[in-house]
Image (cartoon, rainbow, N blue to C red; front, side, top):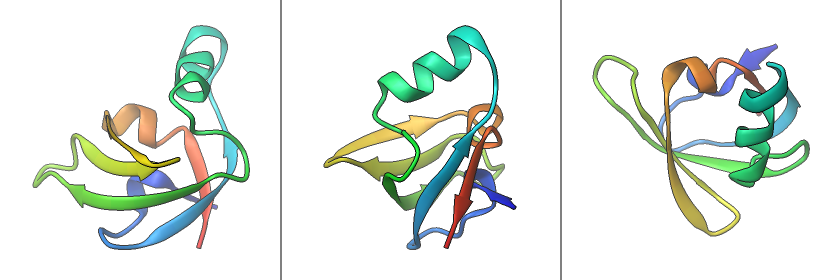
Length: 74
């Protein structure tokens, strides 16, 4: 399954699963990225870190390591 890190800029994806444990998983979910939510990938920095996304009407910047924990489906 693809991760949010692999999503192309300009695409909208749906979150299927959030990996990680404890505080990391909780922090991602507190930002509004939950299973079933739609995420629009605004842009990706040249080296892949950070990834700018729009979720639930607001913009976020995610580290590449965090984006790898989020499994998505086109």
